Image (cartoon, rainbow, N blue to C red; front, side):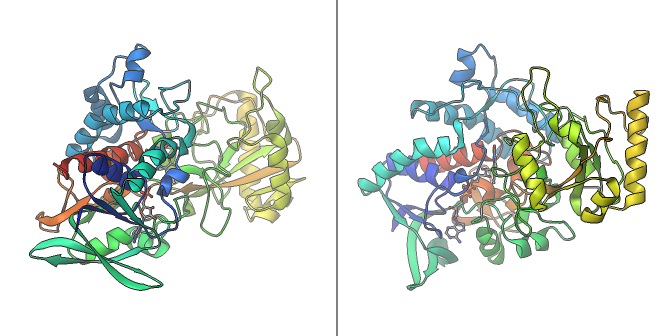
Length: 473
Ligand SMILES: Cc1cc2nc3c(=O)[nH]c(=O)nc-3n(C[C@H](O)[C@H](O)[C@H](O)COP(=O)(O)OP(=O)(O)OC[C@H]3O[C@@H](n4cnc5c(N)ncnc54)[C@H](O)[C@@H]3O)c2cc1C
């Protein structure tokens, strides 16, 4: 019987296991895949906290209270406010802990990030290697605890069910090619992540919502399905919001790290293109700064997809300091031109008519939209949408059409817990022996109905640590 039995060796699971083992607990971890780390391998790793040592050293006067206030201003006081409080209170301790472990902060941190609605203070912290910077400091601790025999890790063990004994959930049943196996724990911590890589579960929870997923492949909602079946309460699906900029690399899949258009905000790159929906019509001012406004306008478009239409001059244009700042994050112009030849998500043509033939965009509408926009640039007044950055017409062949999607990076729905992170059933009663952390709780719980920077990965680490401490007392 383990003191703490953890299901899922990802962000929250690793933090929990290391903390519990560090306090002398005997920890078991079952993990379905062949590796640990989960979404840390893909995540941007932006963490947010108010009142960290690093902030103080930079003269930033911040606190958990200010962080909380910003969050509820951004999300309209939505989400689980008790969990948000718990998350922001623990967040500076989590960041300081990472710092103590030798975390490699990017030199510009902490920063205000505009890819989500910005906080009022610089409080987003991240490493030089995205979330892998987190993995890199956790892994040696993990290996050490495994070596000491304090953590037993069972890879390739897919959790399939739970059993109660003496009115307490203490048995986790896993399955693999060797068959079924039971593991026993005084306390069971569920950290199986989100569900964005399970299209059928996603569509069950979000009917009529297109899924273009950029989530880690193991995010298949196993925990949600198992816990819902035994009476757990799934909530916050209605808060679902996607992130803008994914391009379809494989059917239904985008990848934030491989190919992503810079359309989250216009703060980092003024738009030299127009955005049109599938009908060829503009639907927003492309230089809108507010990420939340952009996301909500994009999901009003059919299929939650839109097109960036630009010409050769826009593609080649450089910033005033001569540096390239192309539409695809981290790409240069040559790479974009090469992608246009592949015609997977980017098309190039010598005329608007031919571009429409290739993409299926309706010619009459798009042509009217483009000539209307070119007139707007001449007049210097976007009476349709109020765009202020009006430097580029769409007039010099070849023309380009880049299709982008509102894509899922994190899922908002998740299982209900109380402020002690104990799982609750439909009636609000504690499910004895069961605890949860991470995306299993849903981004809606810790970020509410809007994206607040760092409010997925920081609570995952923090709640993992809190459980690691409290369950070994
Ligand atoms: C591209 C990308 C960028 C992101 N950027 C940010 C960011 O900048 N800031 C931020 O706050 N958040 C970000 N996120 C979200 C954040 O990284 C995740 O929400 C968080 O890391 C999830 O942690 P977790 O522990 O809940 O799940 P994970 O880290 O995904 O771990 C879950 C683990 O459970 C295992 N598991 C699943 N089912 C089973 C089963 N049946 N049996 C056994 N094991 C199982 C999985 O294999 C996995 O190892 C990003 C996500 C993505 C995909």
